[in-house]
Image (cartoon, rainbow, N blue to C red; front, top):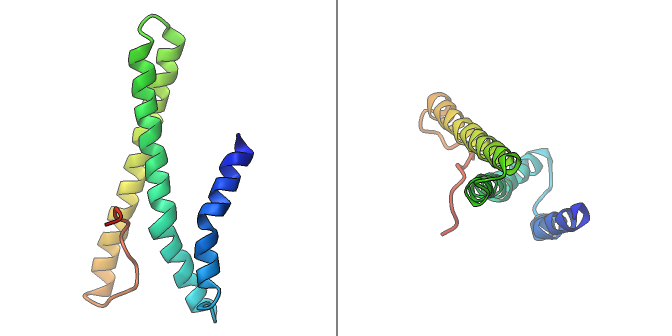
Length: 117
């Protein structure tokens, strides 16, 4: 299972590295590429995993009313899914506050993660 997930991640990010091969010329463009990849691809993936874990926990909790062990596992998924979502949203909120405070209207190149249009 881990091999399948790893292969999926590698194949999912392969186009980004292929298309970026022509535009990375120095350290600044490489750092910009990494930040764009994180904000455009990795962060939405992590948010999706956290939401999926939360929903999986809810399903486990309600589908096993008589099995206390599975309900406890469901509670754990719900808790950690919520914690992950809270941390990610809080982090981007702090980044936004700092960006607005220190850049004062100047575009710094940082983009907030958002859903695809």
